[in-house]
Amino acid sequence: MRAERFAGRGRAYGPLMTVISTGSTTATSSSGRAARPAGAVRPARPARPVVSELRLAAFASHRRAVIPLGPLTLLAGGSGAGKSTALCGYEALARLAAGDPLEDVFPDAVAWVPERAGADAQGRRGFRLGCTVEGPAGPVRLELAVQAEPTLRIVGERLSDGGATLLSTALRDPGRSAVQAAWHTAGAVPVTRAPFPDDRLGTALLPLRVAGTTEGELRVLAAAEQAVVALRSAFLCDPQPRRMRAAVPVGEGRLTSSCDNLAEVLYRTHGQCAQRHARLVASAHTGCAGQVTGLTVERLADGRVQARTERGPGHSTPLGRLGDGELRYLAFALVLLTGPHVLVVDPAAEVPSAMQSLTVLADGFDRSLDARQRGELLALATSICAAGHTRLLATVTEATAASARGTEGVTVVDLAP
Image (cartoon, rainbow, N blue to C red; front, side, top):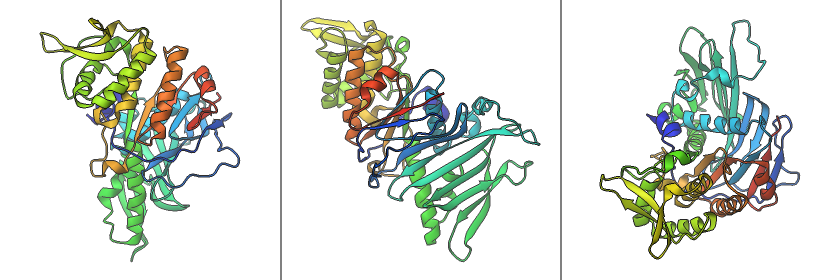
């Protein structure tokens, strides 16, 4: 169910976050490594956990890739540079942090093994990825090694802060579906050891296994919870215009990843979020062809709802008549303006919303958009992300990346095949 909610139906966001903008950043990668600009000053710790770096040590086409992430990060590069792959790496970590089993996250695990990666003497091949999470506990690093062949399993995981290892797991007995985990205790026993399942992220299991009775255990819990909270509040968004044109039944009014229930969500926001709905109408007028004075929803005789664009007094047209670019533009604007409360996401319910943040993952953020729409949507995203409630990680074409370079608050990462 959770996997369906994340990939198929779309992820709902969680809460709000305060992020300190570091200004415009451009990073370049030839072997996949993206470096922080010379002279850049590391920002103060954010009040809410955020993923500040994605590492793809050996993941599909990436080798030793280090991708810095800001409030608004655009991945650029030619075809085959690995932009979509990087987004998949982030999504995989998010799903594992949310508790999804390994086989659901990587149904075709061999596809993520680097090309020409040879097997060892036991015929084993796999991949490695990780991230850095900034937050109240300081920078926390998560590293993960996954065996894809002959059996899919997590064979190694490490959680650390300040250079100290807080959790490590290792495969000791290939015949058992478990790994040996060891975590920092700093009590009567300096390290606690126990078996963990080899198909789940150990970091996500720590809050269920660590009592928090010693200073060391509290440190471990703080790091684990920071990593989990930052990763799991993610919303994968890829609007599908062909699925957005039809009338839809009224449900809970939470937007899916494909945005196929856009009319249902507009039906909800029109009555419940007047101010944000007004901003959406203004964005539609700016990014759509012709005059747009309103976005309304018509309830049909069969109970379904159909969205309409108001074109002035007495004139309106079904939203389904808009072009693909207009529909994608409108969907992204809705996601950015409304935030977590109308998105299908799975936030950490035990953590106050004020301590969480949403990361929108958008593959092809500028797909089907013309130059005017790209500029307007980028300006909207920059404004929203600067406010600190939402972060955006998106793949874009070189045209969009070129216009974004030098923009305050935007990080452009150039990937090279």
